[in-house]
Each structure stands twice: as C-alpha cells, then as structure tokens.
Length: 82
Image (cartoon, one colour):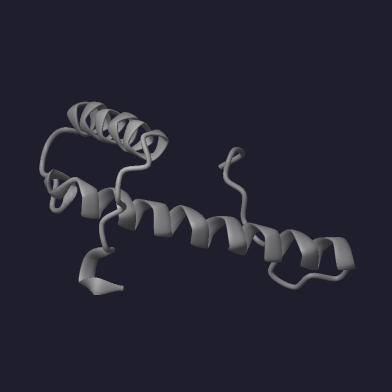
C-alpha cells in the first residue's frame, strides 16, 4: 500500500534509524489513545456492526472524547487497569 508508513527493516543510515524511532513513538501514542477512548466509551469494546456504521460510531466517540479533553474531564483508566 502506497499510503502505509512502515519501518525500515534494516536501517542503514542514521536518518532511517531516527525515522524508525519516531514511527514507533507515534504508534505507541496512538495505541494508548485508542485504549483511553475504548475505556471512555464501553460501546467500542467488541463493536459488531458494518464498517460504514462502525466508522460513524467511532467518529462520534472521538469527537466526544475531544470535547471531554477540552473541558478537562477526568480521563478513565485504560482497559485492564493499565
């Protein structure tokens, strides 16, 4: 896929190594954010709907999450108490 950013398998240059580290850091932050959103909105756990509907539900939850963040609402604990 042309739009998918993947790490260098065997980085040969310092710039490739920096890219791999930056990509990893970004991925960790995104995964943590997914965990927070899933903790805040129980309906996202085990979501079983058509992809088009899932996209709408996830978008609504992210918008509400952003509003809660702006209002400095308490962030729920991540799933599993992490």
